[in-house]
Image (spheres, rainbow over the protein chains, first blue to last red):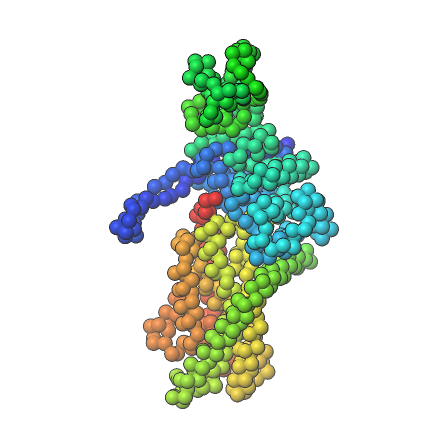
Length: 334
Length: 272
């Protein structure tokens, strides 16, 4: 089967200049600008099969959005090769543009001063969706999102969560084969985040859509993605299954303990377990290697006034934090 | 062989007409939201048109002729330019301001993703429905002064087409200028330059000195917008002006195509 996304040796360079502070710096930069070229993406290879959901992760400025924009044909790569469903994105063929969609959490494609329904009707014309299909798809999307009553409300009057639902609907009306979601849950409350995640998952299962997601919320990644691609400084530093990513710091468990009375946290036992204490010493979160789990847990239960103890796999958020703080733990960039 | 081609062209026109209908519908919906603004725009535009005609009328209170034209020819020309101005303000003008905003904010990204000509969406998606109502104004004066000039049936028939030709030329020159926004990004200056060029085009070419007349007829040919069609209407032997308009249109469209491709290749989009 053809790859949904294929790219090889992809690179994108941006030019910028530095301005000295103050009015003198402004006048100087008006006449003389020393431009620098910076690689936003370099030597990037990626293959994504149709129907996969992958998480494109990395800190701010890592190059995730630049990748999304090259994949969608918005910007032209400086070097390398990209194919999306067999198309070269920067050629912007209509057939290509009918197969993809991009949702940006921080930008809106809906007309601000009119109800979302009017924007949807315009999208119907753009994508030449027959009336019967349009009604059916809109009905399905409304049902999944529970937004029927909001269709006739002006977009500027919607809450952020409601607007994001409308943005997603606007991007899916033409049933794209590949959907790029750039921080779709940014700024949303926990309930709204979960609603969006549930919707994306239900939609992807129904239509086997290929989804490329960027998000700083690891809950999104954990709930949606089978595979993670980690980008640091424009380079790919990890590409594999989410379970493989979670065990990158070794096989460890995340243990949370509550105590009946405050504990002296200076004791040696805690120091080796990467502890995270609350202020009064009655609660701690630990990272314990799996092979030492049984012995350590028993020692804690035996020696301290434990009121509750829970264990779970190491949260992806914690793995991510650790790797971003210590990038040397990752494989060297190729 | 021709049938499938015509069918495809017909489908393409139908597709774009459907999109444009939605643009109009959405602009009406948006404009009606702010009622006071809607009414104010109508009044402001009417005042603007009146001030143009009044200023020429004032001049002719003191002189009998400017160049070879008397008051009637001159007022006919001004009404012709107001007819172009009216269509420009109603259907095109807003889009130039929005294009600059689209590039600065990265809103252009969403336009580039749609499976239609991005230039069409950029320059024709916004209109001012309110000012459409003012259409009676220039046409009343065109008919009024045209009658005084005893235009023949063919001239009357050609009049709306020549107004559209002038509008097409003005818009094409402005779109070509606007392509520079890809590199300039903050393009308030380009938009003000456009407005100044419109100001230049509002007067017949013979009011300008030799150098200015040649510059604005051949280098930045905004004087052709009104002067070429009106001169032809008043004297059919002036047809070479229209040929030059056609040549300029071809040059503009080639330039737009070239700089559009170059602009897109260098477009960096705004960061999110």
